[in-house]
Length: 139
Image (tube, rainbow, N blue to C red):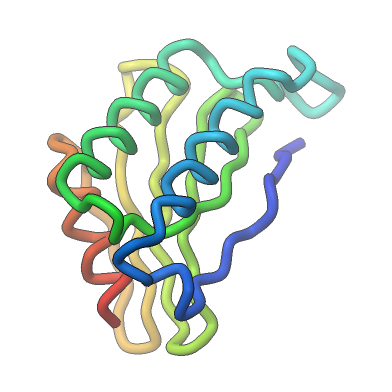
C-alpha cells in the first residue's frame, strides 16, 4: 500500500520568492514518513534508511541551489520502502516526481510531465532536481 501525504498543488503563493514555507513543508512531509508503521499487508510503509537519506540530501541540496523559489511537494512511500516526492500544478498542468529507491541498486530519477511532453532522467546531481523544479516553478 502506498501512503500519500497531501498532494501539493502549486499556486501563485507557492512560487513567491519570499516563501520559505514550501521548503519546510516538504521537509516535514519527508520526516513524517519515518513515523509510519514498518509495514502492512501490501508491503513496507516506512522508508528505508537509504531512501530517506537520498531524498533528504537531494531536497536539501536543491534548496541550497534554488533558495526560496523551492516549490512545495507531497510525499509517499512505495511497497519496497522507496520515497516519491511529487510537485504538481493544475494550471498549467505539469508535474515533477522525484523517485528515491529503497536501495543503491536502483538509481534515483525524476519524471517530468507537462501538457506537451513527458520523460524521465536519472538524478546524479542535485542540480538535476533543482533544474527540473526551476522549470516547473517558472512554467
